[in-house]
Amino acid sequence: MEIDNPTPEELQRCHLARLPPYTEIDFKAFTKKSPAFKKIWIKCSGRLDFQDPETLKVLTAATLEIDFGLKIDLPDDRLCPPVPNRWNYVAWIQALLDTTSPTYRDEYDPDRKVVGLDVGTGASAIYALLCLRTRPNWTMCVTDVDKKSFDSAARNLALNNMLTRTKMLQTMETNALVPLNFLKVDRLDFTICNPPFFSDEKDMRSSIKGEGKSWTPNSVCTGSGTEMVCEGGDLGFVTRMVEESLLLKDKVSWYSSMLGKMSSAKAIVGLLKKHGITNWAVGCLEPGATTKRWVVAWSFGDYRPRNDIARIETIANEYLPFPTMYKIPLTADQSTESVRETINTNLSALDLCWSWDTSTWTGVGVATQNVWARAYRRKHEKKMKEQAATRTSKEDSTMDEETDVGNVTIAFRIRILGASLEEETESKVLVEWLQGTDKVLWESLCGAIHGYFRKR
Ligand SMILES: C[S@@+](CC[C@H](N)C(=O)[O-])C[C@H]1O[C@@H](n2cnc3c(N)ncnc32)[C@H](O)[C@@H]1O
Image 1 (tube, helix red, strand yellow):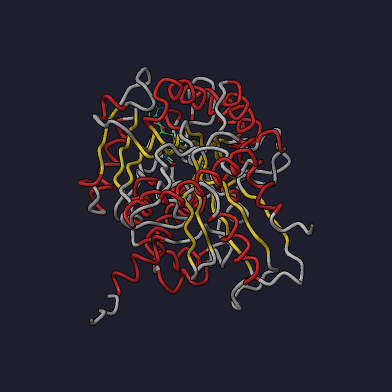
Image 2: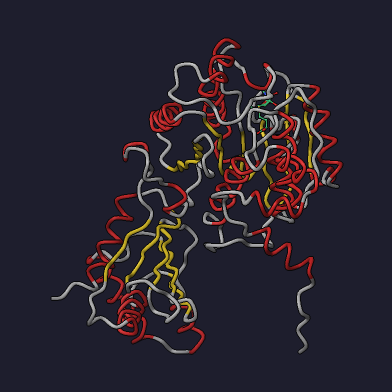
């Protein structure tokens, strides 16, 4: 069979779907790719004036064009979104979804259809543009209360041929923030939102001037009152979203929002915990030297996000969800081959669905209950022996060996790291929690797997 080489478009698509978050922007490289940016760069002798609205506009347009192939046209009196901050939020959401997929994949699945909602899309429709451009199988819903922003968002989506993949709704302050009925959608995979941060105009003006801070904000804010102010500020807005989510529950797989301050992120996590929500994720957006922002996402489902997505180190443990990763260090005398053998022998003997991928040194297990408990194992071994004794035909044997995993109580992945020569890491076993609600069961599983490697 002849395999076609990928076209430049296919390569570009593949590259965009896996773009990492920004750590910095190489402005010098931009001057070679954008004449408009080069003009500004020369004018300011290489010291960009982030307090100048025109500079911000040109920088945003150049970043979108160069890094994403997107066009943008913004009114002067509406927010000009800094791309690194917005992209890092989108990249975080993508990782959250990629690591909580029903297929237990830990990476982008180009065939997965995803529907998102951008609450308060703004004049740029920035989140919708970035999501749709980088993930061809995604579609978006977008809302806004402000007519001028809404019309401008429509223009920007049209400019990038994305209107057919977007459902737009101009909404009202009094309407729901996640208006599934008005949007005429049954469910969503995620919501994304940069809420108005301030509770009144005075608060907004003093924050923009940097009053009460030991530093001045690094960029000018071109946002209007409607964009930046709402009752209760970001905390009030996201509290409303949490309250709505208590009614909508798993009609949305992941609710999320950006928050301006760590204290607001902590307050939202406190609220989630108060309502008994145990599946959440906290991230920090800090692309380069820009203002730090926080992101919180929560779910009523039982797919567990990868540990590095759900937990950041810069916030106290009480605000973080339960760890979803457990590391088992290996000693020098434990070869990765023998470790693989130990894992496969022990897990294949249990009454669970276990599959091992030789090429990636990774296995996935799915169980309906605590099948590693001693009492369960004894019962299972006895049953297996009885079945083997009465087995009469080959068909019987095939049926007996299948494990029914209709009700998934826990799913997990085991990875042996340091097994291949390319990996410059010490050998260790990583156990990851993929699905389930019972953290005691998860801890018990980690203990059982660790036990396979303890010297007796
Ligand atoms: C801070 S701006 C964010 C704009 C854009 N998403 C961005 O990140 O640059 C907040 C947006 O939310 C909109 N908004 C305010 N209240 C809203 C509500 N109740 N429902 C939908 N959008 C709302 C504002 O009009 C504004 O466009």
